[in-house]
Length: 228
Image (cartoon, rainbow, N blue to C red; front, side):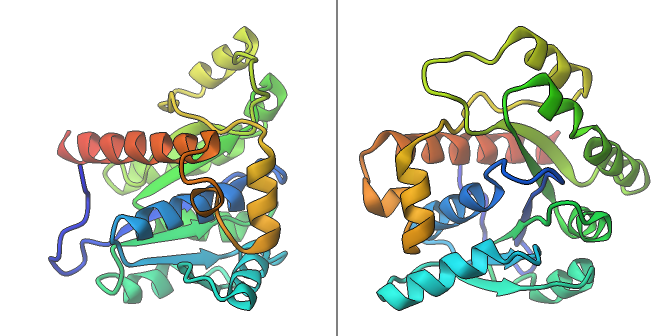
């Protein structure tokens, strides 16, 4: 299940990307990073968004004295070269993608082994991800199918289902959709403002189960696709 080995350059680079704001990219990135860290991995978060939400979260975590994964900011589209140099120093590098900045997004796609695309469960939000999917597919066509990519339904309202029109919009974009997802929970908002994660706030809580399920499915998908 674990996708880290101690061979050089076995670093997994996962970009959490979507050019639309407000889809929970930073929340997903820091919680997944923490889950990996708690499994014993060496994890780095790269904040590529000028708004710097991940950096703010890390600052808050430092103020509280928490031992969270380190966040570094990269605000120029040089992720590909920077991250190449960091490979081998970490088991996983998570890139928190920039909203609206095409060149940063392209840079993240080039740097990543896997792109996780959080989308809110509405057809409009999913259609808005079409440009990103095209960028990923253009990259895949010249690099032997890399990076791999999948959708993550994010911030779904508890108790609702993914609407049919949203589901068919996702299927039309022809990328895998994780069965695991995040829902709108107070715990996510709380941990972002306090520099913590849902795994620390409520280790047996529902939000923690969501993050663990996403991570498990992500790892399975990555290893299946890498072997495939």
